[in-house]
Image (cartoon, rainbow, N blue to C red; front, top):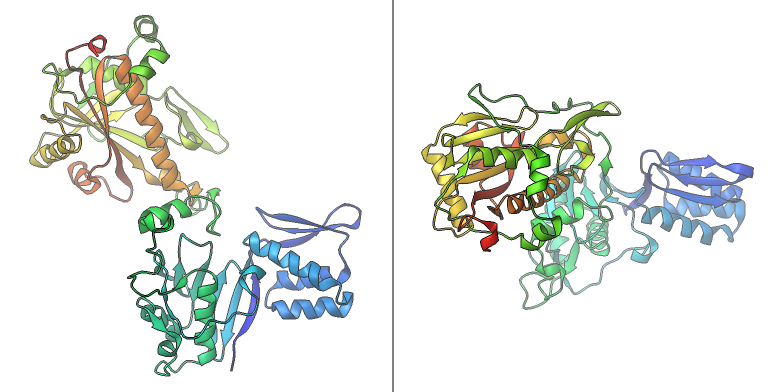
Length: 476
C-alpha cells in the first residue's frame, strides 16, 4: 500500500538549446535560462517533460550523473517550475489514481506531507466543489491551488469535511480506503490551503475578522479567476473557442422592421455651444431626473450618437472590429443599448433596439405590464418619485468576447460597461440632461421582454436618462 507521487508537466513545456551550448526550459508564458547546465540536470529535465517520474526519481538520476552537487540546483529549479505553475502532482495508490494537485506545491509547502494529530479539520470557507472531466475539482480563490480528486471513495471524504472532523473520523474503514490514501489527501489539501483547522467556537475556521473573511464567496472567486496569479488556466486573447464558435457579426441586425431613423447632430455646432471638458467633469454627478418636460427624440438621438454610434470599421488581423466614442477591449464592442422609453417627445413608449451604425431605433416591444415593472424596479433602485423617462439597458453579446478571451472575458465586459457609462455621464452633463447609472437590474426580466437568450445576450448595465430638473445645467 502507500501513495506514490509523479510530476506532470504542463502541455508545451520543453527543453531547448540556446546559443553557445546553453539551455532553457519553458512554455508559452514561462522561460528559465539554465546556462551551462550539467548533463545530469538536462537528462532529468528531459525525463520530467516526458512525464511519469517522481521527484525522488529525478534526484536519483541527477545524483548518478552529477553527484550530490546537482541536487540543490535541481531542487531550486523544480521550485521555479512549481512557482510558474507548469507542473502538477499526481498521486496514485492501490486503487489507481487518487488525485492531481495543480500546480505542484513548492518545497515551502513541504515535500513530505503529514497532518498533525488531535485536531479537527474542514474545508476552507471559500472552497468550491464542482465536477471535472475525471473527478471532483476542489478549488478556492484564497489559494492558487486546485485539487482534482479522481477516486470515488475519496470523493465522499470531501463531503464529510463540510463539518469539522478528526482524521480518525475520516479513516474509520467504512469507505474501504487505504488509510495512507486518506491521510495523504487530507494532508495535501491542508498544505495547499483547501482544508483548514477548525477552531472551537467558530462556525467556519476563517471567520476571524481577517481581510479574506470579509469577501463574499462569488466576489472573491470572480476576482481571483479573472486575474492572473491564482489560477493556472489559459488567460487573455487565446481564441480558445474559435474552433467551436464563429465570431458574431460586428454589428447586430435589426430586431424589427418598425424603424425610426434618428437625426445626426452636427458635432461642430455641438463643440461650439458646449462647456469645456474640465467644466463637464466638475459638474458631472448622478441626478434624479424629475423634470416635468420629457426628453425629445432629437435629444435622445444626439445622446446615442455621441455615446454609442459606430464611427467606422476596420480589420484587425482576421477579425473585423469597429470604432466607437468609448473604448472597448480588443475593439470587439460587444455592448448593445436598448432604450426603454416611458416618456420621450416624438417617440412612442416601448422598448427599442439602438442600431449604432445606421443610427436608428427599432421598436421591439410596446409598453407592457412586464416593461412597466422593469421601469418601477429602476425607479426604486435610484429612489425617484417618478419612473424614468428613458431607461437605457446595456446588454452584452457574450460570445463576441468569449470567442477570443479566456478567464478575463466577463470581467472585460464589465469594464467596458463602466467606460460606456462614464461616456454617457459626460455627454448627458454636456447636454444639460439628468443622468444616473444604476447598480443593478433584472437580466431575466429583460430577456423575457425582448426574447433574448439569457446566455447569448444578457443585460449587464442600466442607465437612466431624463430632463434636467429646472431645465438647465446652469441652475445647478
